[in-house]
Length: 155
Image (tube, rainbow, N blue to C red; front, top):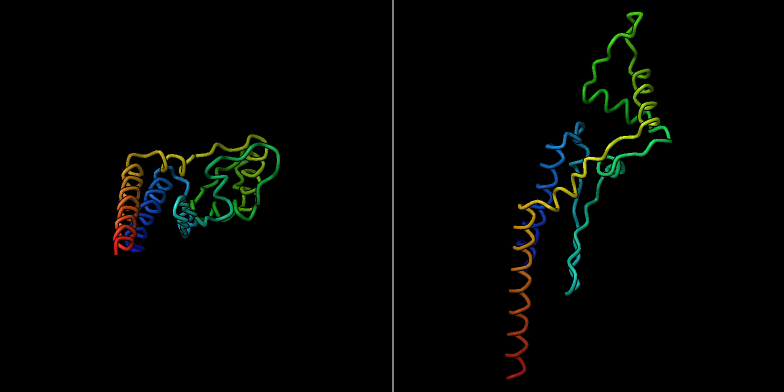
């Protein structure tokens, strides 16, 4: 499989994941979709790496109750989303810092549910087509290599 074909297929995988992130509503700031990809092929194994932002695992798998999440990340999320605070019983509207604390406290108490966007991407029919294209190209490469070796041994 030549590098151009492989790059095309890898870009398809990345685009499928980006679309799934959007569909799942977990990419408010756009940071989750700014990842890069790398791959390795050692003749037996094809490995695709996604270089994702640190917090992707929480978007993917959720976060259990317990630790308080980073307040700065929540404040950024509030500004990007944008979250409109609701007045409390006395009519006061919480500041961004207060709102971030309240959201963080709820996450620390209850945790969050993951969206499993990467898992959904890998199990999609569109991904099946990409995997089939990569397999076909790799089989063609192997066949070409076998024919080349046979021709060289005959000469």
